[in-house]
Image (cartoon, rainbow, N blue to C red; front, top):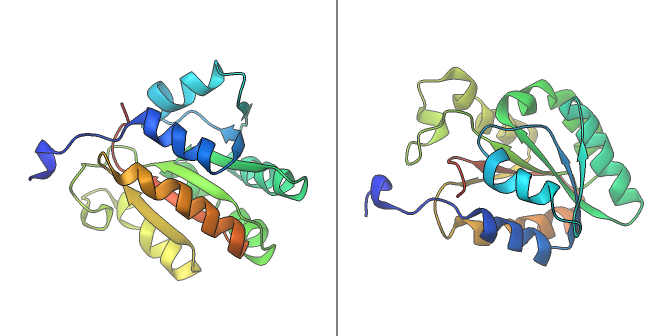
Length: 172
């Protein structure tokens, strides 16, 4: 089956994975890739608390603080913000040993084309940078990939290490 014929990610399945992993807080910045079908429904749902932040590094610190308080959270942002917050990820997530879980939209990614092969420089460098930092990351592009979200969050909390879930196509 070609990439064009594969079904897109399901926002409902992504949300179900967050629920199964015990995530009750989402720190978020608007992300063109995930805002419409993932973030907006969470804003209207009293079962999850959305903390809207101004900068991605604020979100990293908020997620670390929630962990210190015994809560599970994720940070929702796009890849440009991830690149902007690399130093905070290093200090708070890696050196501080905090399980910061990030769902990162890959703005203008072509599903089926690995980000490392993108003509867009900002997309090409995301995974190599995360790899150099030793940060686990997973690319989520198509229906069925959502099943990797919960286990990745569990590993992050077990290891007290960040994890980045890269969303390569708009979830519907």
